Image 1 (cartoon, one colour):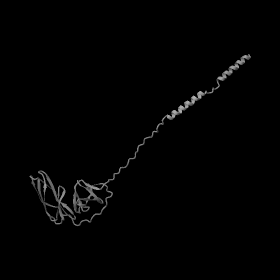
Image 2 (cartoon, helix red, strand yellow; image 1 turned 60 degrees about the horizontal axis):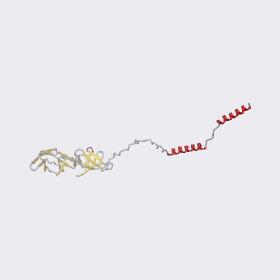
Image 3 (spheres, helix red, strand yellow; image 1 turned 45 degrees about the horizontal axis):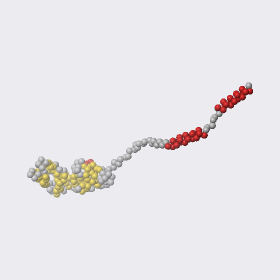
Image 4 (cartoon, one colour; image 1 turned 45 degrees about the vertical axis):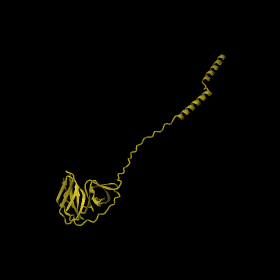
Length: 239
């Protein structure tokens, strides 16, 4: 019986020893350290992903500078009278054509421009002007004194003639009108361009021009004084 107890005791000791934790071997610990080192090294070699920035749009639009630049100029859609002052009571100095672009040198409120032409400075009504360039620096001017008296009576043409030479393609033109008593002189226009200025008491204009068969040319005569000017009717002459 005693022998049986001894065997039982030995068996119990053997069974309990199986449940005790076993110590790690040096080889196992070294393997764990090696694996950890490789994991760290791999992590260091892995490139970091670049941060993705959210794209932004600039909704603010730059305000364009609409102010005109350059020298101030005036252009015209029709033939326009240019006078010594702001109004029809002032003498007409010249006429500006749509082909002309003249410099603006002054402004008279509410709506007159002073421009520089080949005939000198003169005034044009703003309703006929298309201004351009830098207008901010254009000075405001005062008007000259209003002329006394009135413009001459309308010019009355009495005779006009054209003599065509088809051999030379030239034409002799003669225009006559009734002289006025209060004019300072007369201006003759061909095809809306000033071609001659005559003294007071004149009543005839003649010239020779190049003109082919079938071509036409237009004329009118203007009487002027310090108060203004008046025009004749327009005539057309044809070879």
